[in-house]
Structures are given as C-alpha cells and as structure tokens.
Length: 105
Image (cartoon, rainbow, N blue to C red; front, side, top):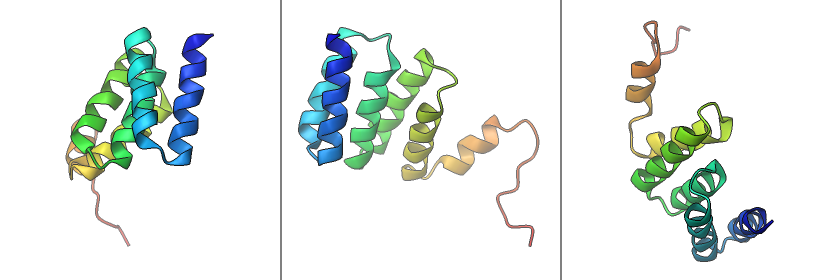
C-alpha cells in the first residue's frame, strides 16, 4: 500500500537524520490521507528535531484529533509543550484535581 510505504520511508529518513526527506514524506502522507494520524505524528517528530515546537504542537494535535487516545501523540504533544515552556500550564488545565509539580520529599 502506497500510504504505508511513504510512512516507512519517512521513518527511515528520520532515523537516518535526513529531516528534509522525512518532512517531505510525512507532508505527502498528510496530503494523501489527512484522516490518518501517522503522517501528522511523523511530521511532529521531524518538527521537534528541528526545534519548531509551535508547528510540532499543531501537528501532534492534528494527529490526536484523528486518534484521541494515541500514546505517541500525547508523547509528541508533551515534547512540543515542554519545548514551548508550556507543559506544566497545560497539564494543570487537564488535571481534574489540584496538581503540585513540586517534590513532596
């Protein structure tokens, strides 16, 4: 299947450190199949490696809209939020009980 071969090729480029080729593959995957989370998550990984945290956040969120309980998506979103200095703020918004980020020891 063409979509899975583009995803595998993008992952291979990412592992090899060829961010431009990986980004092109994942963008193509998003164009071909925007409803699938893989392209969005792959693109988020590339953008994180490029330290483009705002764009990575958008890509991770786009993937999570398609796969709301995907662990990879939450991991990527957390990395992007940490890069933006917003992780703790966003966690507090999502936590139903008061959350203390300070050590209790």
